[in-house]
Image (cartoon, rainbow, N blue to C red):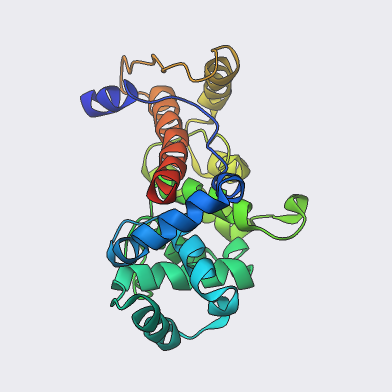
Length: 253
């Protein structure tokens, strides 16, 4: 409980920066950033998917989206003179799936593997991870940013709803704010504390609508109960999206 309280002291509920818009607005700075830092970012294990996508597109236009892993590896060696980390190659594969398929909207296992890439993990198709809600939320934010179709038609099906709800329940969460609210109905079905959901919604509404923008959150956990845990985790989840986007900006701009 003390750990959550300590984390909450530094968190804010703010809308994440639209990374792609910032990259588009600052094209010259982006090119400079890529030229100066691409090598380091490609061998690092914690580079964001936004930056990797920008580097790959700058270097290879759109051709890389359909390349096989070995072609990607050789192209990076030829262009940058580096052996990209296994985690970077895994992230490139994740981006290729995001750009060319929609299987992540209905297959929970693929969704989880993409979330593992966001979490700087090597995707292992022999295991079930139950990724925490922060990485699922960041992944959905990334998918929405890169989605080329009608945003109203980006729909996460029952399998993804079940997966997100199960992961939330494992963390003791009974309420999910955006961008994970699509799994709330399923979470209600598998939880025992649905009577507290309305309380969570009211508390959340007060936090995000009644406070001035960028106001640090003052929400203390007074006791270990589902409402407090859920609100705290949603604050952290929303802040994690913003932190990830800010990291992408700092990597290249």
